[in-house]
Image 1 (cartoon, helix red, strand yellow):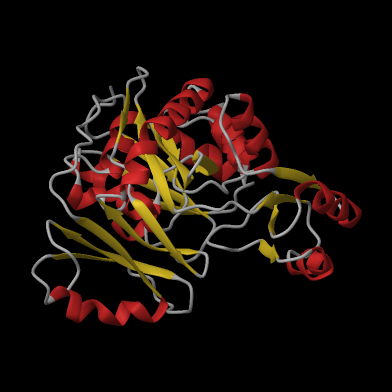
Image 2 (cartoon, helix red, strand yellow; image 1 turned 90 degrees about the vertical axis):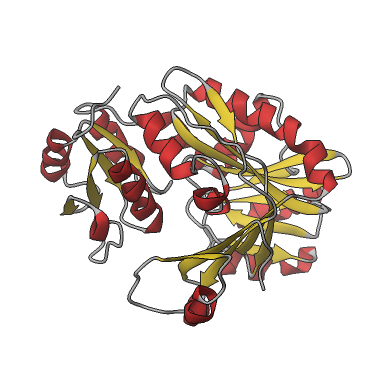
Length: 357
């Protein structure tokens, strides 16, 4: 177990790193943020901050020397960065989950190999392959870049095969995966944490609503169809975590369909759909992630009371904070980002034991 006063390094300087840093401080740890970005809302609440490139090996080595363990707040940290750091300090979770999550094609093949059910898919390495994939998968479908892309970025919808050229250009002609359209009733998350000793715990699965490809709300209790499919989704996520020897919070996103849960994607990190756990669960996803990477006993993931609703504050929504603060049932989180722009997550609000006004 990592003793209090130790330093936990976090790769990435966004809001997830910020909330991890707060959780770490509550457990007596110091936090050192490493990120290439000039603005780092995580560094605002951390003891130390290194602003340097992901491939700056001397700076990475110096960062590792100041840390007792390292984790990451988002899945697009370069794999080579994590590999380099792993030669100097323990990195949890390790590189295996990161490598798979960064490659949508590898991720789908990996999950299918474990018995999971992703949507029908086909590799699209070039434009000609897109036509072949459409013949196999059909339309409507979604074309997604193999690498990068989140919150609806790096994706294009095809309502018919005639949309192929426009879709290929929309993703800047990058290698991609074509996914068949899934008819679903709801979207939900399977949120779990796995400790250093292999212990696994799950939070209740919220129903997720997206607007414009970006998560808008996560709510509990979920509709009955999600509750009935939660165990199957959890079993798959536990199998994934075990196969990867994963340590920390791992999230799977699923479609609830009449044929059972369909795997959409995984995130090897704390997740937006788990923000409700800060006030809504006995132990938040952020605290349990820190507990896991520090080798501490995991905390209870039980939901405190129902209902629970988490709403993202995106772009101009941040101006709603004064009204939200006037709601005695609302817990407000402002990420302290300086630039307000459309589609940018700037904060969130959570209601526990009451519905939003």
